[in-house]
Every structure is written in structure tokens, then in C-alpha cells.
Amino acid sequence: MNARQGPPRPAEGPSTFSGPAGPNPAEKAVRLMGLLGEPERFRVAAAVALGSRGIDDIVSLSGVPRRAAERAVARLISGGLLERDDAGYRFAAEELKDASRAMAVIQPTEDFDAPTDEVRVLRSFIRDGRLKTIPAVRSKRVVVLDYLSRLFEPGRRYPESAVNESLSLWHEDVATLRRHLVDEGFMQRHNNEYWRTGGTFDVD
Image (cartoon, rainbow, N blue to C red; front, side, top):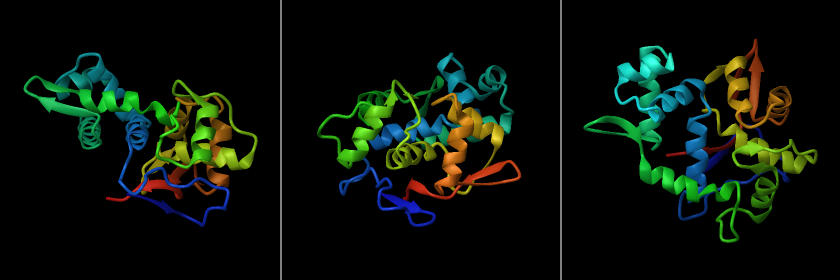
């Protein structure tokens, strides 16, 4: 299920994506994209995409230290993006197919199980995995910020460089996105470190 943490959100803010039946395909797609928002996991996943099957090959190709690569692989497996067979690590084909079909978050259909206004905002501002423009209207901007906040794991601190790298996958103006995430209570900052404090998140 999903829950909201952090300070009370304004009435015009985003609501949770999942319905009473549990996570829908679009929610799964969001989580998979969020897994790749962390730079080391992104590099490890790229190494697997390029044919690395064992941890030694992944370390060599990605440049990620071994222990960090092992943690990244474990997280990508637990998150459903990677799986392991006799040949080694590979992408979970069925999960990727589901995620591809579930780009309904980005190009939603009418039966998508999420609030209609939220769907319209995401469909208007996100295309092909990129944020076209940062919404000028606050209520719409908060919906987009909630979506982007899922790139970051609650309870983990990120250096500013890592935040920039993750946000740059979505939009070039990372400074403005960082500022909005802090101003709207989705993240906090201290001494060039950021951590997530609000937004929609998963509860097991």
C-alpha cells in the first residue's frame, strides 16, 4: 500500500496512486523507474543491459565498487528489475513488459486507476520519460514533484551531486527542481546533503 509521510500536504497536493486492489501497473512502472534514479544502480543496470552477467563483469564495466555493486544488484532484484538464472543476472522480462505497457503514468488511458486530475497533469508534462517543462501552476507542480520524489528512498541521505544526476534524467534544470522539492516539503537539505521527507511512498 501507499502512504504519505512528512508534514501535512495542502489540499491541492497529490494523492496516492494505488487503489484498494493494491499497486496498479503504473505504480509498478514508477517504482522501476525510481530504482534507476540512484546513480550506482543506474550504472549497474546499464552494465547488465550491455551483457554483464556476473558481479565481476558488472564491477569492471560499471566502475562501481564491488560492495556497492552487490548492494545495487540486490536492490534491483528485490525491486523486480533484475533476476538471476544459471547464466547470471538479467533483466526481468515480464516486469519490463508490464512497465512498458504501464507507461500509462506518462501516457495514461481513461481506465487508469488514479485520480483523474493527477493523470492529466502527468500526461501533460511528462513525455517519453522526460519532464517537458516545470509546471508554473503550483497545484500541478506539486503533482509532478510527488512523482519525482519517488526517485529517492526515505531514510537515505544523498549528496547534492547524486540528486542532480537523478533529476537530470528528467529535466535539465536540476537546481529549480531541487529547490521546489525542498520548498514543498518533499525533501530537506543540510550541508549539501538531501533526504526525502514527504510524498507518496510504499508501505509493505
